[in-house]
Amino acid sequence: MNIWKGKVLTDVPFGHVLVFSGIVKPNPNKISLDLTDNINVKNESETVYLKLEANFRENQIIRSMFQPGEGWQQEEISKNWKCEGPKNPLVPGQTFTFRIAVLQKCFEIYVNDNIYGTFEFVKFPKQIQYVMIYGDFEKITQFHHRMLFPLVFPKGLICTEKLAFQSDVPRKYEAGTVVAMECIAKGPPTTEFSICFQCNDTGRVILKFHVNFNTTTVVRSYQRDDCSYSTDDEETEGEFPFQRGKLFKIAFGIGDKAFIIAVNGQYFTYYNYPVRCFSISTLKCLTNQVGDFQVRSIEYHSDSPLLARVEKLSLI
Image (tube, rainbow, N blue to C red):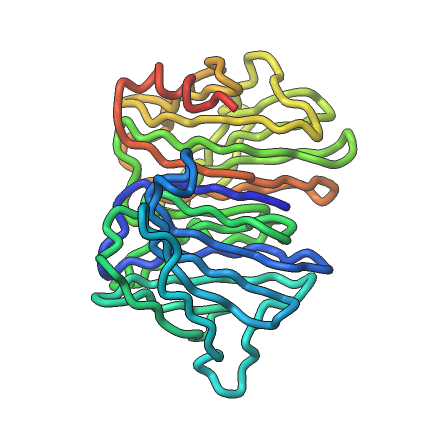
């Protein structure tokens, strides 16, 4: 069973939407998604505001919630709102998308970009902090947190390269924000991957963190005004802390003047901002044609002091 975890940067109030996409395994049994206030303790101590369970053997999607001391409640097993649609629209071996909008009295649930149904709150889910997806999926390829209005699709998410994962949040990264990711890169010795942070106003990459296993180099660079890259701007100093096929955790901290980067609990390097005026709320992960890059978890944090937290948050 695969498990994917995500921590949101901000609260998820009325008018916000969470979007998740991934790939179903060829012979699945179940895929579940929990919106909760905590994933670091046992079920008895957390509130699950919404649980979606796509059951392939029974061809249905079950909705429920969990409250400490009260257990699981409000289980709903109903047909797809679209009368002509399947009870479980997820297809083995294919991509899937869950989109969950927070309305005044209920969650509105979309599956594969089609309305599926709703789920009423017992109490308003203002304390959603975490998401956990578990079950029979190959990988999760996107995790977005947006506002319903205005519905903005960031320029940084429009990509013609081989995209492995992408995520955006409803506000720009302020100084003190840390993005921490558990990842694994698989493939032959020529495997490469990049983690890119983009300015939403211009679409330019402010930091391209590029890992090349063939040359055992980590290149840090950025896009110039004409969106080109130049070898004159590249930084390559430092060790090579990555191994193909081995899980690693990397954290990027947003400082006053630079990114601060740590890998597996150790400070790695810093990267000065190439421009001063930018608004980052989007990241995307790319790989070359032979590589397979997966993000197993992503966390957004926004408190301080920065350096100590970057190192700590990069611990596996």
